Image 1: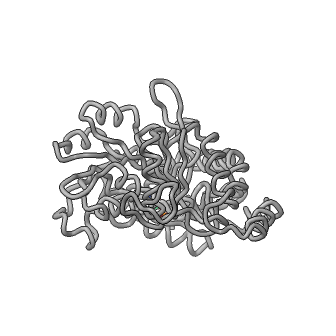
Image 2: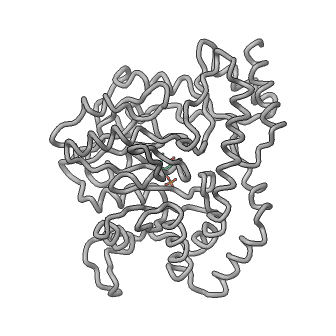
Image 3: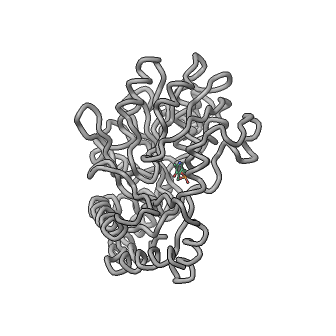
Length: 370
Ligand SMILES: *Cc1c(COP(=O)(O)O)cnc(C)c1O
C-alpha cells in the first residue's frame, strides 16, 4: 500500500543528520527539537498552537479531556472510521453516539448528526476520512447553533484544506481542537508513533500540554491536574521536522497519483471514484466503492498480480464486540454498513509512478472479466 523505504531514500542524508543531532544533544525528552517542529508546523498550518503528543489516539483523548468531556456526556462520531475516534470518547468516560456517513463523500452525514443532537451531546468529532475534508461549513454552523465543541479527527488529512466561507483552511484548524497522527503511513509520518493537537485557544493549548506531561505546568514535579505521559518523542520530532519540509511535494505527488487513477478508471461503472475538489483532498488513501460485482473477486485477482489493496474498514465500529455495550444493531447505520462491504483502497504513496498506476488499473479492469 505504501513504500516508506523509497521515500526515505529521497531524504536519507537529511534524516540521518537529524537523528544524529538528537543523539549528540542527549536530550531525548522534549527539548529544542520538539519545540522547533511544533513551531514549524504552526507556521505551515496557520494555527496558533501545535502540541506534539505520543499518537493520534492520545491527541483525541487529550483533546476531549481538555474540553472536560466525561461521565454523563455524549459525543457524536462516525462509525465508518478507525476505531480510535470512538475509543477516545469511551476512554474519557463519555458515550459515543454514532452518526451515519454520506455515500458520496464517505464522511459524516450532517443531516444525521442534526437528528442525533440532544442536550447530552457535548462535542462532534468529524473525521476527514481518507484525506477528504468533511463538510466543516455545515458542521460548524450546526455546532455553533447548539453550543457544541467540534474536535476534528485530522489523522488522515495532513495537508488537506477545508472550505469555510469561501476560504480554504488546513484540516484540523477549523474546529475548537484538531488532532492528527504521525503514524508511519500517514501523510506526514514519523518512524514510530506520534501525533499532535492543534488549537487557536491559549487556555486549551496550555491544558493539553500540561495533561500530556503529568498535569505539570512550568514547575517540575508540581501537578496541577491528573495527567498522563503522552509526549511526542524527540527523535520523532526531529524526523518530522525534516519530512515537513517535503510535505507539499509529497502532497502534490499524491494528487498526481489520484489523477492518474482517475484517468484510467473514470469510465468503469463498477468503480465509483472519490469525489473532491483540488484543495479538499490530500489522498491519504485512494478508495474506490465497488458496486454490482464482487469486491472479494477484484481483491483476489489484484493479489494474484502482486498488487496490494486494503479494506478500510471492513467492520463498522458500532457492530464490533468492544462497542456492543452501546446497544447498536445491524441496519442502524445503513450507509456505513454498505460502505464497509464496498470500499477498496488501492496503493497510494507519492513515489507511485504513472506506469505502476497504469498496471494496477489494467489488472483492476481485467478482474471484472474473470
Ligand atoms: C490513524 C488514525 C487515528 C489514530 O492515530 P494513531 O497515531 O495510530 O494513534 C485516529 N483516527 C483516524 C481516523 C486515523 O486514521
